[in-house]
Image (cartoon, rainbow, N blue to C red):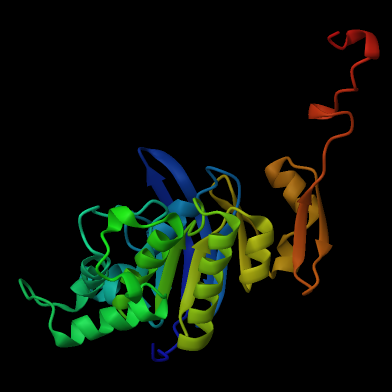
Length: 279
């Protein structure tokens, strides 16, 4: 995949109301072209809503700027060429082949009622090669493993030749081996092809290892932002997640977040006396 012009993404005072309830409140953050911004926070913090706002999938107040353009002012087809969005639970039609599904990523480049041509097929094949799924291009989606499915979804996103990759929990249903494969793949894409990455990530240690910048959300607001070392502190994590953790530097210098058991078991309860234990 050829290197693309790097593209900054800037979010300024973005607020979202869904079903008459505020979900995001004046959120601001930014990532430089070719960087990786990870959105972290507890369940319901607004991470998915923010990434969907960046993709133009929910109405919002404020501004989302991609490069020099305001995303909301773009036509949907233009925005789809620039931003590729990978949802947390993508729908994969089981009877489509891998090649047919990845080729759908070329849709933003096709005219009305146009069919994919030779160039589109070459771009789709290049995307499949890049994520190592071309070898089973003819396989039906229903026959893929979890890791294979995730790579195919990313291949479809790459087939559009985007400059920004928006990933909502890209590893949420993967085991640790496939999780690492997908994250290394995404990291390689941004380093080699200049893609800008914005993702939501559940695992704090993983977020600190791969992302350049973190934004910690809670209750739809930004609690902290900056480098992984600045955001992943024991005090902040305890305050936002109500969790006892120990944060220590890993072998590569990135922070590692480890849970710490409460003394005496759940909620700090003292251990049961011997006489209270079942016989």
